[in-house]
Every structure is written in structure tokens, then in C-alpha cells.
Amino acid sequence: MIVAATNLALALLGVAMMLAFWRLLRGPDIVDRVVAIDMLYVNACAMLLAYGIRMDSLLHFEAALIIAMLGFLTTAAFAKFLLRGDIIE
Amino acid sequence: MNVAGEVMVSALVVLGSLFCLLGSIGLARLPDVFMRLHGPGKATTLGVGCVALASVIYSSLRLGSPALDGLLIILFVAITTPVSAHLVAKAALHRRLPQWRRDRDGS
Image (cartoon, rainbow over all chains, first blue to last red; front, side, top):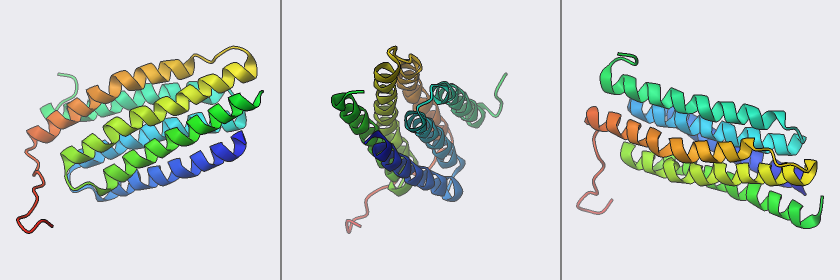
């Protein structure tokens, strides 16, 4: 049952990542692309968690934690760059 | 692992991925940058929160001790998602991006 549920969840998250990737390719402005990257890393974090449940391994949970932390840094650095033209002033 | 735990983990995983999909649909379909920020900002917190809670329940039922990575992920995503949405919205305001208006004929 857990295997079927996580398979369904992986498929749904794959569709979600494809939609975010479409916005990343198409987005009219660079801000849309930053939002799409934000969405992509959050979906990748959830996908890694679901994959860890499916494969019964604790290692994937720690990888998801690292993705969640580094993804926030990515978005913050992009937003700072768009606001100020520089990241570390 | 008992049946109730399996049902709970499966329901949380499917619910969380449905919320993530909802946020992505909002990101892909809404007409303007600020709406596109609004859609994923709420949905993904709940989505990742549900999946991480499922992982905590799964590891505590399966291994006997809860993996605290899931709780850390919930805490971290709940803190950082509003902050990053705020930063990106400030950048969008700074760039004076156009805002969507409903036309007179309602289209």
C-alpha cells in the first residue's frame, strides 16, 4: 500500500516539476524564473522524501534537508541580486 | 508495521504531493508575477509539511525511533518560504513588473 501511494505521489510530483520547469522556460521576466526555481527545489525536496519512504532508507531524508536549506539560499541570493545588483556588498 | 500506520503514511504522502501539484498549477496558470508568487507560497509549505510528517511517522513506525530530519524540514520550510516570497516580491516591485487587470468585458 505504501509502495502504491508513493508511486502515485512520485508521479504527481513529477507532473508538478514539469509545470514548474515549463514556467522556468517560458517565464516573461526573470522574477518568474526565480519563482520557478524556488518551486522546483521545493518539489525536489518532497520527491526525495517520498522516494526515501518508498526505498525505506534514512539517507534520502538528510539529502532532502540539505536541498531545503540550500534552495532557500539560492532564492535569497537571486532576490538580493535582482534588488541591489550585487550579492555581498 | 500496523495497518493504521500504513494508511496514515500513504494518505499523508498523497495529500502532500497533491498540494505540491496544486501549487505548481498555480505557478503555471496564473496571469501575473504576484499571483504566481502567491500560489506556490502557500501550497508548497503544506505539501512538503505533509510529506515530511509522513516520513517522520514512517521512520518511527519502521525503525522505532523518529527521524528528526523530517521535523527539521518542516520547521525550515515553514520559516524560509515566507521570507523568500517576501524577497522575491520586493524584487518584482523594484523591477516595476506589470500587474494583471481584468478587462472591461470581463475576459
